[in-house]
Image 1 (cartoon, rainbow over the protein chains, first blue to last red):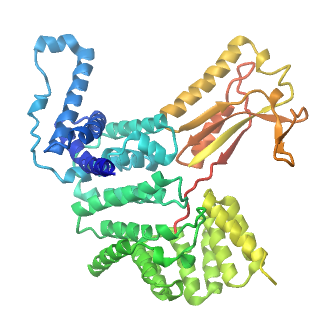
Image 2 (image 1 turned 180 degrees about the vertical axis):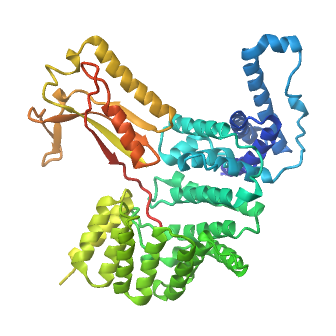
Image 3 (image 1 turned 90 degrees about the vertical axis):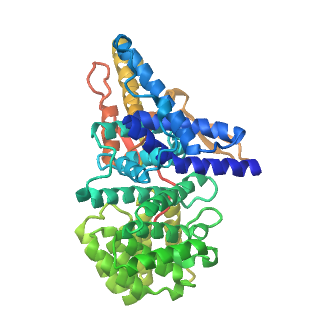
Length: 419
Length: 132
């Protein structure tokens, strides 16, 4: 067990150091794709060597040194292939002495942030940005990422390598984005972190531990961003939202992985520490007067988490928060969730009218969530036959197995009620 | 999002007019096309799996008997189509899955022209749950 926890400690140390090391190597050599490969190799070397031989006194310097050496070896052999003779004629090495990299060079904390901005560049598709972020900033191996997304390692390797190529061709400089585009680029970063969190947010109990780890990874990375941008309300809001949502994880699935809706969860299983931290964060953020997409959702999650029992949920406050949220985003999913809150305050009939209005807009036409919410509201309104129809319609269209099972069971429960 | 792309081939004429009766260079062109498609999907980081299935002559339908033992039936001569092979791809959206299916459907046939075989596209369900 000791050996295991030592190995786990090293693993976390390596993953914390990964973006710092990559930043240092990037500053030295520039080539993102090659630098990223070299850092991965250094991480692998460390993971093999350190548990056996002990962690070096300056782990970061060790990694930079090894990665830089890989890098120079690589560049040397490339150059050798391309222009061996020219190089021989000049008798000089164009990249300086790799041994001269100062391992004690001050850590540029912003490197992690700059890397995140690169990996979440708008030129990348979400799936590419996620994969690249997990590897370059999260320090995860390709095999681990492939495992989490249930695709072959070779496929994931290609996805990452193409993502790096896209970053290269869109010539993103290794520096902080200009002030004028900072907010928008940060929004992309937060969105990618949010997607990673959701990927890990699975219902399945035993088999999907790797995916659950993605939630932890998203929280870890968001914490790192929070440490670098402590005054940003949306960063704090996102971290709070993740903590407050993840806190319910032990209660949200049953023994066979079935979904347990919020109102039926055993709240004694909720992670109190995560809730306390999330509430403190969101309270601090809102007290500063910053409201945003994530901080408001975090505030809503906090109201849920504060209720000792489902019946004690402060629905008027949740509805008020949704009203503010709806003013800053035209996301139809938010409008749909607001309809549920409205049903809890004003009753299901007016909420059903809200759902009709959302349906008329047509933007959720392809989503099963419209049917699922409608079914729930119809049930609250006592219209059981119609509720069954919509539960089944939603079940037929969802791509999530736990959700399909949940919706089917809801329909069956209404269909087999004792008279 | 993962999708399964299923290529269905017509059963009629499978034996006496199937791919085995094409000119060798056309068979090669067809196989090369499929190999190239898989290569592209691997290079784009979208390929999860691609498999061709053995011919329908040996296809059996299996049910459990009362004692739980397998009861085999078939092959079924009357079937109009059979599943020739499938791909599982991990793509960003549905339209990309359709696009890949259309490429597969365009594989060249006996005379070198696209076969336009029907490709059934179905989303693979995930263990991911909804957000609360």
